[in-house]
Length: 151
Image 1 (cartoon, rainbow, N blue to C red):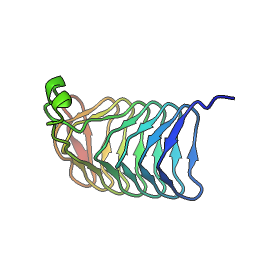
Image 2 (cartoon, rainbow, N blue to C red):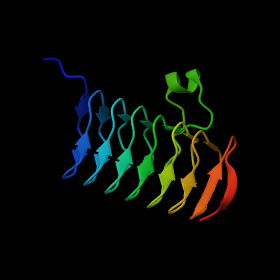
Image 3 (cartoon, rainbow, N blue to C red):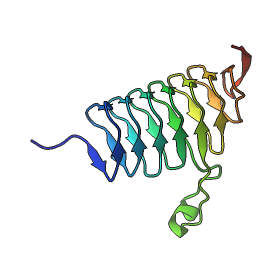
Image 4 (cartoon, helix red, strand yellow):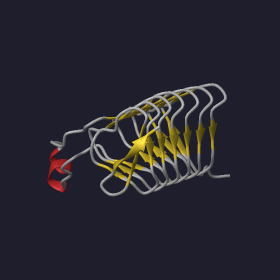
C-alpha cells in the first residue's frame, strides 16, 4: 500500500499522534502532541509538549510553538514579509521567525504574518489576521487582529 504522508528527518516525541495525509520535513515535535490530517510542517519548525494542531494547517520554516499550544483548523503561518518570485529564484528572500508562546490558542482560519510573537495564554479568534505582536493573556479578533480584551 502506498503511503499518504511524507515524514522525513523529523524528531517525534513519545505519545505523539500523527493522522493521515500529513507532510513533515526536518521538524521537531515533542511529547504528547496531536497532528491532524492534511497538515504540513516544514524543516526547522519546533513544536513543544502537549500541542494540538488541527487539520489543514501549515507551519512554515521559522515557526516555534512552545508547550500547550492549540492551533485550530486551517491556520496559516507566513515567514516572509515581502514575498517575491524573483527573491525566491535568486534565494535572496529573508525568513522571519514566528513564536507562539506557552498556552496560546489560535482559532481556525487565522493567518499569522512573519515576524510575530504571540504571548503566553493569548487567544486569536477564528479568521483573524495577525499583523503585529500579541501580548500575554490578550484576546484578539478581526482583520487586522485587534485587542478585544484581556483574559
